[in-house]
Length: 173
Image 1 (spheres, helix red, strand yellow):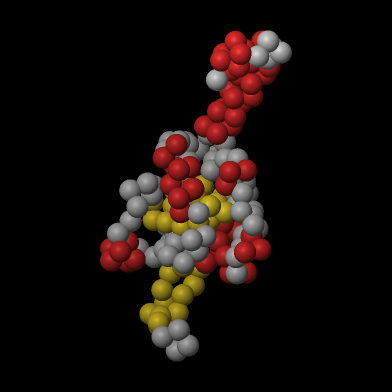
Image 2 (cartoon, rainbow, N blue to C red; image 1 turned 120 degrees about the vertical axis):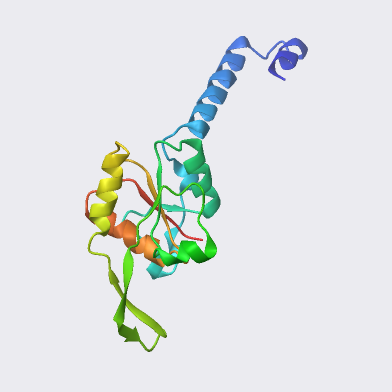
């Protein structure tokens, strides 16, 4: 289009063409950069408090998929549900590992929720640390956390942020 405009309009300068080319190149760079960007920004006020995190980093399931598949070796994707859930409902191919945030306590029945009680996995952060080390990454590596409802992944994201992880995302939908 720019070439046609230059031919049809003598006031359309080569400088305009250069500026448009540079702007397009910058836009493409930002769009395909491996660094998470404002594309993944989300208004946390739209979420219930149980799904909000200390880091404030949120992804839709679609954006999580895009982020992981765009750079699969530099983004970690962790399912924080318990080990049994993937056996019944399956697991996304992009998940690097299942590391449960909460474990069941068969000795404590929760009558209100009609299920076994749960407690935070005391080895959760250590298991994340081990995976990060195994994958030769660090605490600045983008980490996507997901669960069935978004509550546990939000809680896990806050726990990891408190333990020095700086690029943790939760899938909210």
